Figure (cartoon, rainbow, N blue to C red):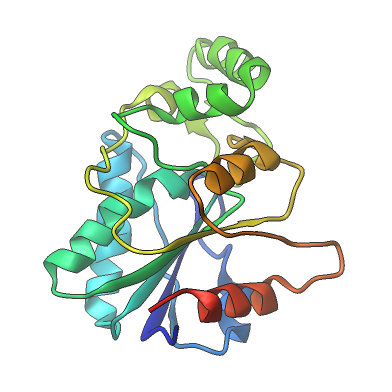
Length: 212
C-alpha cells in the first residue's frame, strides 16, 4: 500500500527520539511524536501525549501506525483517537513489541506471558520503595506503570498488521521471538531483521506490502 503518513511512536520505556534516524530515512511522509506520561494513569497519558502532536500535524490518511516495545498494546487506543478525527488506519507495524491481548492486561502481565522469570524479578524489584525498572531502559518506570490495567482493544484489529523482529531480548518485552510467534499464530506476516539489514529499508518494504 501507499500510506498517506507513517506514524512512528516510541515505547514508554524508550527515549523520545528513538525513531529519529528511521524517520529521516523512510521514503514516506512520517510523523514521529514523542510519547511521555510521568504520572498515573500512564496509558491514558501516553496516548494523549502522542495524539495531541499528531492532531496538530494533521497527517494525511491512510495512517500506518508503527510502535516498538511496550507501545505495542497501546497502538489500538492511539488509533481510536485518529479514527475519531476522521482519519483511516491503513495498517499497524509492531517492531520488537508486546502485542494487544483480550481483556485489560497490564504491562507486567504481558511480560509474564513471554518471560515469567523476568516478570517475577521485576515484581520483586518494584516493591522496593521508590523503585523503577528496568534500570537499563531509557525511561525506567515504577510499580504503578507496570501493574496498571491497559486500555482494552475491542473489535481490533481494524486494519492489517505486520510484526518486525530483530530478535534477542528487549527490556520490558522479553524474548522477541515469543511475540513474533504470537503474531504468526494470528496469521500476521512476520519479518525478521538480520544483523546486516537496515531497519528503515525493512520497514519501507513491509509497509509497501500491506494490503490496501
